[in-house]
Image (cartoon, rainbow, N blue to C red; front, side, top):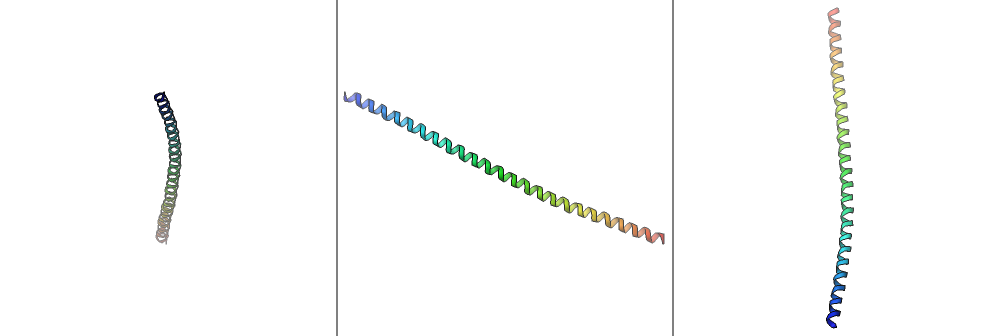
Length: 89
């Protein structure tokens, strides 16, 4: 009779252990999902910031190049007009 009680107790303990393990696995899965979600969100924000900074830098460089070209062309036209004016005198 005691052997049957021991076996029953062992089965009960095994069942509780299995349920506790399943609960722990579920909890770990939820934590992993949350961590992965936060990592993804953080990565997306970092990429967006990098793209914005690159765009700002490109815009600034384009403005500088446009100003340089405009000044160079203006100076060339002014110089040519002065030379033509001197030739006409």
